[in-house]
Length: 314
Ligand SMILES: Cc1cc2nc3c(=O)[nH]c(=O)nc-3n(C[C@H](O)[C@H](O)[C@H](O)COP(=O)(O)O)c2cc1C
Image (tube, rainbow, N blue to C red; front, side):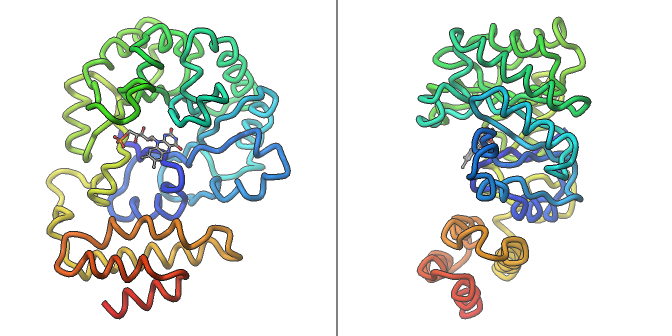
């Protein structure tokens, strides 16, 4: 099983579609969405993160937050289709960002003293989700590898447990510790044999993931930043897809244009601003003569019309 990783401000419905059309994956997840925000007047602004395209494989809505009652409410809305289009719910126990950790959410909950709170939000989500599968995405631990955390999570029989094989303290600064997943696979076999274990961290493409899955005995792999190096990273090995470095300038710019087109069609009424869209330009406008100059000209624009004009002017 191959999964496109959730990445905030990156894997919205538009980018998930672009990557899927390049080469399909089995599953993806939304950017993480705060349940407490969704249960507040700020909801309309957050709903753009929960937009989803029906035909890009399985899609999980990824949630995080603080208040168990809001996990019940939002899980129920996802499960009953009030928030439509999802096959499962994933709880984020992996985000290492300062604000989330300070709020004792996400990866902070790996710490022993916050397990009662983690248990409350898991039970709340399971209650709201009913029959809809619930999965967790986490790390190896907070400031050290802590398998008691994974054993704790497995008691709830999640459909899937994705492990980014670094601790919170390591952020993404050290190489992924792929070997460390093997103990989690062993725990899974003992505690929750039906849970799929997904490994994540520094996996570059499908072939790389398949090799790692075989070596370490996991059920699947998740690729995040690998898509920045190669949007075709989910291509089957042996397919006639060119390595990204060999894709022509014209094809790369056609893909950028497609991304812009989908963005314009999806987010009418300025639902999402133009500036963050420019973060994607580096993916497509690279690796050919004149790429950095063209990139700069696109980055200097401040709306879609200007962006298209810069692409057309070459
Ligand atoms: C820009 C960015 C945003 C991210 N946002 C999320 C998120 O919303 N939810 C989540 O579970 N992980 C998030 N992550 C972590 C990734 O899903 C993934 O676990 C991490 O990048 C390691 O995988 P990789 O080496 O394949 O990139 C984010 C990572 C990046 C780079």
